[in-house]
Length: 486
Image (cartoon, rainbow, N blue to C red; front, side, top):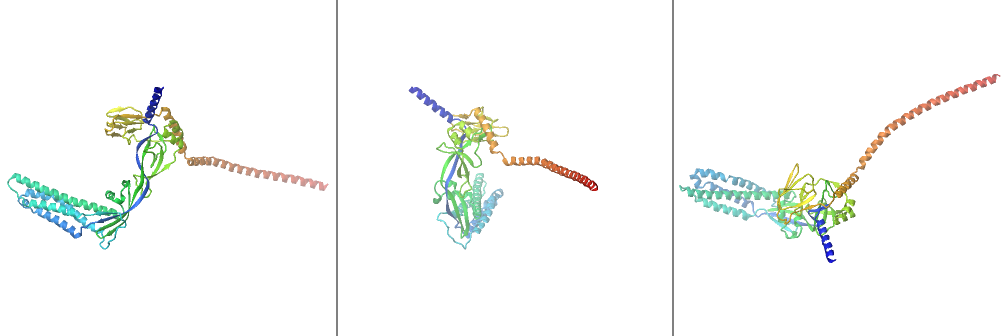
């Protein structure tokens, strides 16, 4: 008896495991972070530099002096071939240097030397626009390289000429690189200041804010930044921000409706998702929005949409009969194949050619394919290629446990759901009114005609009656005259 009970329990566990490993109406697709509470933190940015206009001019003058000395090297006067080649080689650096100088001059137009105000918040990020040490260090390296070139002379030894060329090429590379770096840095700074001055926040500064202690904590990657003001001050700008960060959040699992021959559960729509919590089997329908103040598009606010209780119970317990009876369905065209959160590949469309490692897969959609080989999904118009993965120890395929009768019942339910929910009463009322008007017009015309006929008949009858009365009166009058004569 014990062996029989143990066997039944084992069989039940196998059946439950088998059902869990089969597709029904919903399947986990991905993860979604939800904000349940959000707060705003006032942050001030102090964009400044200690580099004065005089110091800036000296740096550019120094680089131009280095360039002039380079072009006047003795080796260039004695070797025309080297002169032409290597004087031309520094032209990219010259161009970048000229553009950088112009941008450095433009930098100071963002400042107002008459203002010196303090940030409004105690949470302050200091944005160092130009680091003097970076400019001075690059200038020192170029001077050292240029000094090495001063002793070069051209000789009859081929090896010496080759060493000279290597030294010159090293200087050219460094000069062009330094000038390019100066230009890229100042152009980035100018671009950021232009954006901040327009009350928008540059994407490349978000990582800098995340280092602030006042913004430390979970959810900082979902911050929403609003620029309140930008005020020019002495040697920089003061920018005031309101940074919205999640005060609390949670992670949920999104569920994708499984499509059977173009029919799936009704409910999912733009910003509306079937979901469940990571440690729960309760299915919920969430409508998510990012239009609330401080809410980031990657972590929206969501509220529950009513889902019929019997339908929800059927989805949670896997009761196919209850789902088919109480849930609503719709017609849909799913993507041919999608990669799920567990790296399985969900195939839902008919008429596709699927190969797993070059071998054709003959399963009838929908199914989920787990493979460590390359998977190709092809149709007449497109081909999707999913790369090989190595994290599957055992390849497997999940198929649906819905029978052909279940799918037929789903299609029938979908037909009546669509007919009822998408029935446009106003359109049919308009057509009914038009048809009724078409019937009433001839009836009205007939009524008018009959009314005219009756009026004519009544008029004719009235004339006949009057004529008869006159004749009777004449007879009576003649009779009275005859009696009076007698």
